[in-house]
Length: 557
Image 1 (cartoon, rainbow, N blue to C red):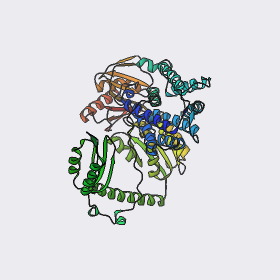
Image 2: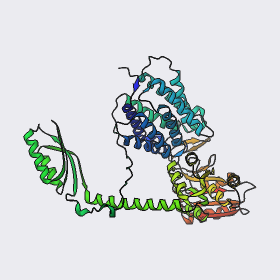
Image 3: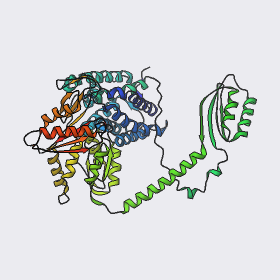
């Protein structure tokens, strides 16, 4: 049967199925990362972004309107956006959501215009849009939608044509980005987008999928336990007991009455729902085992659940107390005077965090390579720093977009994103900050300083590939520079030295070594000695970084 419109319930089901499909396939998408490093995270970033929106959409319930879901979709993905791919996905959702607001149903014409607006919004969010990415895939599908002129085209045919064009565009990404072609992969962000849309179309076509999501709890409004006057002593029946009896035979009304009488004798708050095949029981009791035993007399049990209400009550009171303390702290924070300048840095590793603290960073966000922080993480940090001007050091090129997105959302202070793409650049930026300069002058001074920093990260490969003409095999040691592979070999120190030979020039004055959690002090001392011997006229500093995955991070300036 031809379908020409989508109602709110179908839209909800399509979006949640798309999100679930991405969640199920995120590790496969992670493997499409061009560099074969153990922290390929496109699938993870996109999943965390869409799950932030899915949690809010799911929490609205099945009676939500399209307008309700558009707000949840836009706001949830915007705050949860992580990494470049996640931020671009959130902007696609944002543009789409703006077009469908105030509509009760979606037809082909509205979906087409919403796709066009989604692409326009996403392209604007990226300073230098690059073809061969998720942007290309989204644009090609929007153009394919607009090219369908036959007004009799039903949505099933419409979606099939869009997906076909999306798959073709995805297969063309290696032709637009040579690095993809050399690595033998398609764009991971584009694949993530196709995975979402494939799930959406599966739902449209009636495919069933478990749509269980971790939905954030609603804020509690109850004050402290002192105000409630309730203690665990007031709880007469301690176990909330729920289960389903899968009946072996139909139960008569008389038997139902006897069962209700039995469960009532066990406790209170009885909910008893029966049909010809099952009976669903909910009861508060001190003897959940007896409830289960009684149920077994009539059939098998499923979905059994027992919660200790006394412990839950204590936890609730504890959470309420924590929330009250947090509200009081927030009130005190609003009353305290703002600092003129505040600093937020994304960091990886205990040692790196310590260095940033010593340099005056007020708030550290753990993340970077192995877990890109979200826009919401940035917003919370900005609020906590409580300064007139807040500088953010992303220290990773995949975090800058999320920082920029947070910058655009903040209205009560000035936020400056310093475009640091590595941790050594972040350290240099902090060193070059001066209280005597204006914000504009400081930003220019920091940007000038970080432009002189060349960085490489030494790690191991997790698959065979070819990048920049270099053959890489699973288990090889790689040095990855600002613009690509610098060296590949079988031993960390040898690869580090080869990489340094490509980074050091006649103007170099300082070489910094930051050893990771898996690179011992003894190995660091030996590498430092090798560097000092090879570059006797250049200062060499060794610091404990403690970063995971990367044996050492080197910088030259």
